[in-house]
Image 1 (cartoon, rainbow, N blue to C red):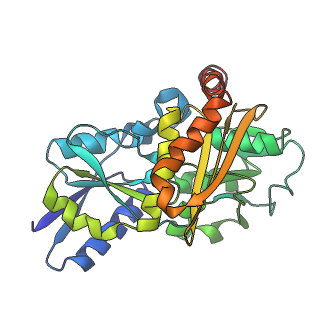
Image 2 (tube, rainbow, N blue to C red; image 1 turned 90 degrees about the horizontal axis):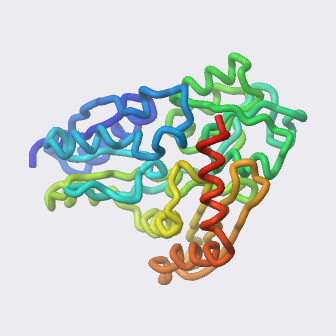
Length: 314
C-alpha cells in the first residue's frame, strides 16, 4: 500500500490527533503517503442540544465510518472516549495509543480550584458524568450546558458566561492551550473519576490485514489493557452518553487499580466500587467490577438516570 487516507473531523483537536497519527505513520513507514480527508459529523453541526438528548457517542463517528465503508478512507482517528463499544460490519478498533493525562481539568479566569469557587458558581459541562461528580462535591454549583469545540468553550469562559468550565486535560495539553486561561487545574481522580478511554486515541480501521499491519505500530500495551477494562465495564452496563458513568483503570507495574462510579445526574444517589488486581487478570476485571455494581442495583439506578437526563437536564 502506497497511500493511506485518514477520515477526520475538522475541529482543531481532531486535526491535531489526525496529524499526529499521520506523522507517526510516515515516520514508521518511509515511502507511505498519508492523506487527511476532512468531514463534518452530526455532532459538529448540532451545538445547542446536550449530547445525551441527540444520540451520544456515535454523533462524532457515524459520517467517518460511512466514508470508510464507501472506500473513501482507510482509518479514522478518534478520542477513544467518544468511540462506541460496537462497530459496523467491516470496521474494527485497530489501535489504542499511549494515553495523555487522563484527568479532567478545571479552567477558570478567577478561581484556582473547585474548592475556591464561590457559592452558586456557574460551571460549564455537557458531560453527565462530570455533572454528577461536581454536584456530589458541591450541590450549590449551577451546572450549565457547554457545547462547541475546545476553543469555543474557552472563549465562552473568557467572555464571562461561566465561573469555570470542565474539560479533559488531554485535549488542552495536546493543543497547548493551558496558558490561554489564568487557571488550568487538573482534578484529582479521587475527586472526579474520568470517562472510559479518556486520554487515549482510538484508531478505527477497515477490516484489512495490510491496513492493520501499518497502523499496529502505534499500539500501546498498557493503554490497551487499561482501556479494555474500562470499556468492558461500560459494555456490561450498556452505558453511553445518556448515563453518568466514570471508570478508570491504572497499571502500576504489575498491579492494576480500577475505580468506577455511576449514579443520578444530580449526584444525589451514586454507587462506587474499586478493585486492585494484577495485569494478568485484565481480561475479566472490567466485567467483574460491573457485576459488583449490578448486584448493588446499578441497572435500576442507570435507568432512572437516563430518564432524568432525557426529560429534565439541559
